Image 1 (cartoon, protein in one colour):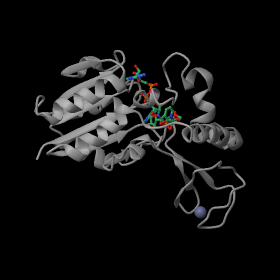
Image 2: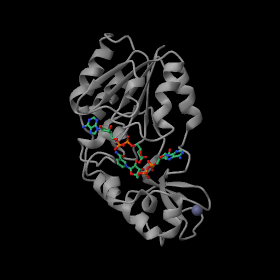
Image 3: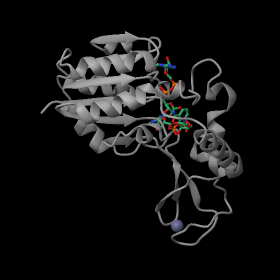
Image 4: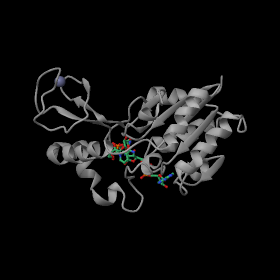
Length: 235
Ligand code: NAD
Ligand code: APR
Ligand code: ZN
């Protein structure tokens, strides 16, 4: 049974209206990531960090999955083998499009984590230091369930196993700027997978892929999925 492993980044959600990080006007051109996306930043000013993610969570309620998200959900439903999506994104657009086999390696915007009892909770609305943990009842101990710079991503054991078993590794809409995700292509190709990158432009790791397809995700992902389902790419 062949396995297709798909890594997605902010670029797959860009056409839904979710800002990317490193494109012109991206998030890191407007915010200092050290202040809003590190444990040190959160310790120094939790109110600023909660507001950063509350703004993102609110934005998320105004956007919809796009044709690229829907194409990946169709691939999972119709492909004769197995498909798993590993996303760096914390938005919920893959699940809202119907993808089931999904790993959020950088966490989820719509979840909160209690640093005291380590429980996780669905969290759709604003989060603040004054909210009490629904489990242990303490206040001031809830944080966004998002992996910050310097922290290790979630589910790396499962991810590593997927990359070793993959027959095809596909990367969609990621700049290849952040590790460990940026080295997934080397792990997969080192274990015999065919590798394809779909992106608006070259990424930092483009030359490591067997094949590159350039364009906007909503334009290139649906026909790519059609070709996979038609057996034209023997993924
Ligand atoms: P992040 O929360 O996604 O995580 C930063 C990542 O950088 C970590 O997972 C870590 O793996 C990696 N990293 C950086 N330096 C590392 C190191 N030295 N060693 C190991 N790993 C290292 O990123 P963020 O910076 O907090 O971004 C803000 C949030 O906004 C993110 O969660 C991001 O996903 C989110 N966002 C989401 C979307 C979307 O969901 N479409 C779009 C834009 C922004
Ligand atoms: N279609 C396809 N690709 C696109 C589109 C689009 N419409 N728009 C942008 N892209 C591509 C850009 O060319 C770029 O390669 O998406 C990528 C976005 O790169 P980044 O902004 O760096 O986002 P990402 O790769 O997801 O960042 C990785 O860095 O800050 C951390 O954890 C954060 O998960 C994020 C990680
Ligand atoms: Zn708790």
